[in-house]
Amino acid sequence: VNTVLSLFEAYQHRLSIDPGPGYFRPNDLPKKETIIKLYAKSAMTVYKGLEKKMENYTKEGDAKQKRIATRFYEIRKNQNK
Image (cartoon, rainbow, N blue to C red; front, side, top):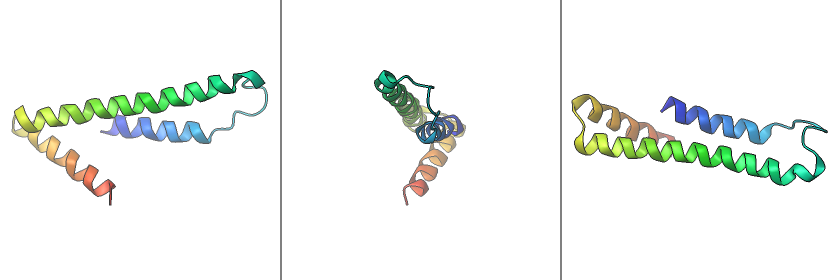
């Protein structure tokens, strides 16, 4: 969960970074946009994988895995308030 959260935080941080003039050439704006989309897609892919793992823990996991999944869903629910 911490890894997924840190990926989203890194994505948000990268959106706010202004590398300054000269970092990207003027014609590199599409490259910059592609890089930012890649960060977002990577974070979402990892999150979806974690979600799938938690679903499996809920359905087929042992007691410890079910507790982990329950905690994951509790945290996610509280984050959406």
